[in-house]
Image (tube, rainbow, N blue to C red; front, side, top):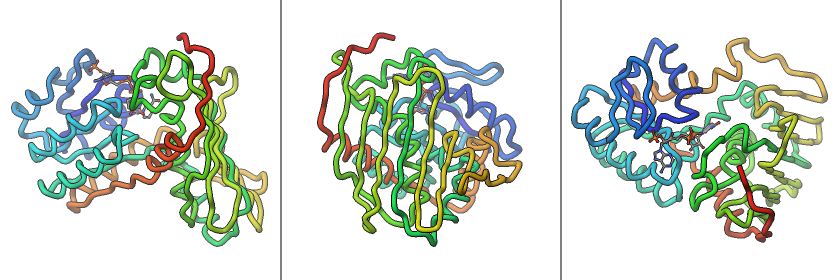
Length: 309
Ligand code: NAP
């Protein structure tokens, strides 16, 4: 299947392009980006031009930041293309619902991807937790924004979500592995004086069984980077490290399928998109976004030092 990539920035070049090139199912047929290009691939700077001139491309994959995403994705759907969205699938829930409605109307597939759910340890964690009683779950997602998001001013603007841009990956795993639904009960947001979005956040959740659930997110972590989820249950302790790549039960690493390496997240997303298109299906789960927006709504705001890149 031919696919066009829209928004040629860090994630498009780091993950989407290699995943598409390595897949026998996909051909990278065009890009659309104001500045970015991919060697040997037809490049457009305007999405309407790409959609008009390349009617042979049936799938469009969006790697834009969340704010400009809706308008571009809606154009592709109206032009009858199947659409794949990077996380988070939009800047607001209403935009995502509108895209879903539009996709149904135009009978195309829409896939709101959550790449961290494809990490190697996640399926094993879900299976292990299914019959346990949860007592406590903590997320620690601490990374250096200067290292992972260089020059990405959009993260600090309205709709950019700040530290929730990586934090939503943790929430996409938590919502996937927990058998029970949770919801935000309180939050504390640290917002640099010169930014619109948080650089750090502490979030507490209500769990129907009374388990203590919390998330600590921080963009100011230098040195060792931490993307860990720990769950204490009636029958032992589960830990996911490396953003979900490694699964530990009671201190012992659980062996993963050799094919499920960290770099396998995006190949698995494209394999799933191929199946959705073949089956005429949709996959739009907005639960990680709901938690982020609830935290942004309920959170007590504290001003912190300006962020200077
Ligand atoms: P990025 O490096 O800033 O790339 C996004 C690209 O979108 C830009 O290079 C830009 O290309 C284009 N764009 C169009 N309109 C824009 C606008 N108004 N503001 C900024 N850029 C605009 O960002 P990214 O890290 O690739 O992230 C893109 C999406 O992928 C985000 O939703 C992010 O959460 C997600 N993601 C990122 C990572 C990561 O590690 N970085 C990992 C997984 C998912 P042109 O200037 O050429 O148009």
